[in-house]
Image 1 (cartoon, rainbow, N blue to C red):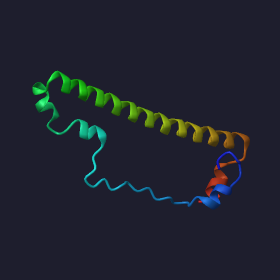
Image 2 (cartoon, rainbow, N blue to C red; image 1 turned 120 degrees about the horizontal axis):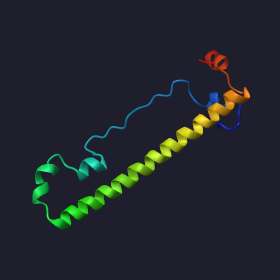
Image 3 (cartoon, helix red, strand yellow; image 1 turned 180 degrees about the vertical axis):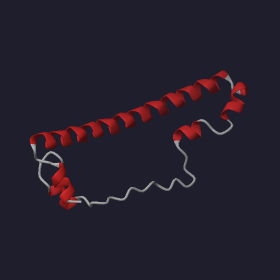
Length: 101
């Protein structure tokens, strides 16, 4: 869609795309579940095996979050590269952008 260099994406994409946050309701983030509100107060009482399990859980959560963050940043980099290419080769211009808003 971005690589075609044309304006066909304007026909498909609405100008004002609403962004809504999901209703989390009773759901909690994985990190919040792993580190309950009273986690630090119970830390001294935890057995070594419990601490190892918490460490393993947190490591897995960190890997998942880092992977998602990398994908987001890779996608952003691709979009910025495409925009740069379009402005550089003249297939996009600020004037053209302003005419379509």
